[in-house]
Image (cartoon, rainbow, N blue to C red; front, side, top):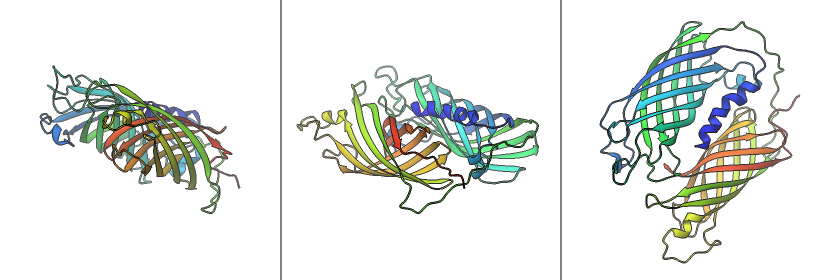
Length: 368
């Protein structure tokens, strides 16, 4: 759920670095969809047609140097509410999430975007061993809400736009408590957006030039300490701490393309109770993995998505491969904040809360 908080901070990080006032927009959208039963144990849940409503407040970035590279993305906050496909067992879901939309087109009359959003959500009904045992997707009232999709804007006039979308909305607690299958809801949406136009003023920044360097030069080296926790079955069981240390080499090759390579050392205390009939020690439960990820840089903010494999994993509780999706924020003084979801394919493992340091950090742009 901390990933949700960082997405809420994303608009603040961007707005605080703006150099002029730009246009703000308010939109209202209705959505219709269905509950996707992504596990066989959820086949009994999809009973009701899904209906959702969204109220969004957004701004198009036009005055940061990096925003031109992404065709001036939209950044904002959305208020969300819907049923969850089974009013009797799952109830209703609601929440708020921060988002960023990357335009795929440059036209002013029609803009087609890809949306990524995450925030905090609540549900009205959760799993209960006696009162609601069939609610296998949700075990906590407070959850993370994630929205991934595509959206179009057709501007009838500069201030008025028709919006349409196709997206997937997801509720989950990130495996902080079990059961946690989560709910996945595909939607189609239609709505209206009104833009509050401001007087056009030229930006007061000087566009920095990205300096490209050979592949084997100018890699940044970081070390990140990670702390988390994890609950395992049976339901209502104990929570176990997770400690990890990651050594990361990362580099930005182009304004919108970055890469990282990491060596991970993980101590997941829940492994002590995996196949409890096997004797274990702190040394034997230690996992070592190698990770390769793709970075999407937005100034000091960067998204990361990638896949790793365990080099050392004696008891193999989750399989050979693991995945990461999340974000990092790099301060100019070298301090690094890390908030990433670690998973094994579609099964969440835990959220990596981390603080690190980047050695000899010089930033992503170099003046020519």
